[in-house]
Image (cartoon, rainbow, N blue to C red; front, side):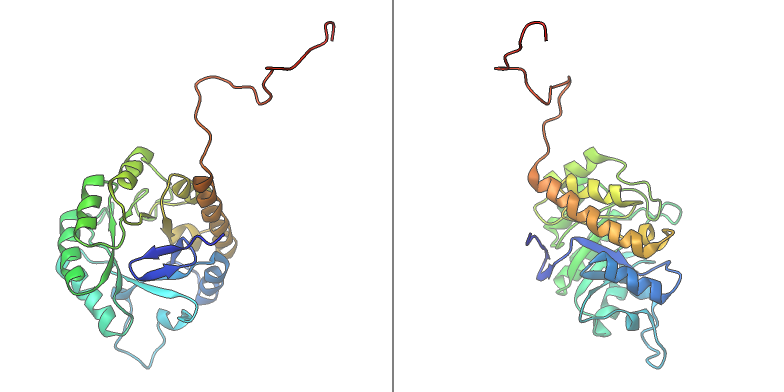
Length: 261
């Protein structure tokens, strides 16, 4: 089934986006990439030494002929810092694509949505394709879309918590509020969480910890690939109506029964 994901000018074969942090080693990380079937890999550019070209960094372990690198501004607590990191990635030749994060609280890692909106406007004006990490607020999602964001990325639960979708209704409101792609970002813990996101109508899902901290990251990456695929198919198929009472699987209408049997 040809059902790729388009974000701005970028077309992805997979609706699963994965990160690069917390793996036990680069070998495990690269094998997880392969097992996931992902087309896009996100990297925290602020934590990469781009100046020392004589020493390998995480970018050297990502095959750019296979994967589109999505620089992210993880670690930024102000719009100014997030904008600076995005510009740094562009200057290093990584491109104009950015996953925009502006964190407002160090304990919960919840986004500072006012600063996020400010940074989105600046970067869109500079020609970036902006993918903002936000909360599950339909009002802010719409404002980000109106500011030129190529998609919106509401959290399912706090970053790294593995709790899955905590508020399905809020996510549905976000899906109803915008016409751009919705990528669920943060909080996925296992394959069923990923499937739920796609079943609800999300266009994709981004995850890191759920794969990297699994007992077998490579096997979990494969499970996530299958979960995203099955969730998308279930959404396209359309689920049966939810009913209050039982409904026989084999209706009795028109069925002739012999007496005494």
